[in-house]
Image (cartoon, rainbow, N blue to C red):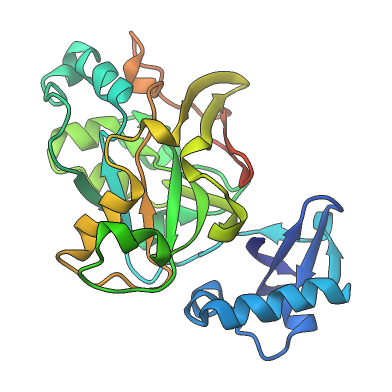
Length: 297
């Protein structure tokens, strides 16, 4: 099931995306007892999902997809987005070979433990919304296509063997980064957290709809040119490891977002670097989740 947050006629609500018919099922129309925000819906767990499935079968509450505007599935997360740095071997290698102004900052070998950082909630934007690269005073905005994990059942001290039971679903995330701010401030938070530097969407696909998450392929195009292409199986630290590591020190909560890292092919990896420019279009696809596309402004 593809869960979405959308606006139509000046109102924001949640629904289900029916790609086969280019329609949206408005859950507020067909299941009035459901919450109208994605965070509250996720917190209701399997009961809410069961009600939503019944709503789909009713055939009611359908809107043409062209009538609505898709937002990020979780437009304002409960707290910062958790992110993982250097989680594909080929990406680590390209960072080591980056231009001279960046090489000394990324010369470390394959990390022995996951590298965590966060992006602010105000960085989140939805599909087709403009990435405001012009807000970056260093003109070094870069793309990073990623699979993001949505936590369902929260908890602390989650064992690796139990971790996937805590996954609600998955979405696509673009970890847009100011490379020079990332370098200059050493800790990555500022370079990752500019307003609008976290496009997300178009939907959350529930975990039960994906047979083998490791077979999913992350692909990123810039202006129609394929730049990134790798499978989730290539992660250095897999999803259970990330959940176990995070929950060892903190309580994960329903709706928490974990971006799993980006494959090789980022703009910084080219010589010279190919940073985003006004007028560019970034498109990230992960089947069966869909495609996240954003222009650059």
